[in-house]
Image (cartoon, rainbow, N blue to C red; front, side):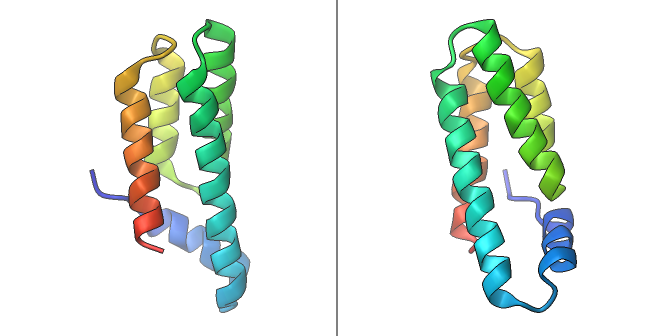
Length: 101
């Protein structure tokens, strides 16, 4: 899976313009939020906690126009709590996102 970035980058460009420092801060904020929500998702074992964590991931993804992540969050919402496959794919997404900074 390759990190899909066109819409995400366009969103950051619209917000930060040519301000490289602001762009970097927004990327870091996104990565930190994603890591936090992923941690909650990976520890969720009941339906309610799973749905809350997946919903927060979906909201984060939608806000940044990270459509690939949004689709994974929606898949998590439709899946069973603790589904290791989707957690692994979101973790890979985060790793790839951090690698391209």
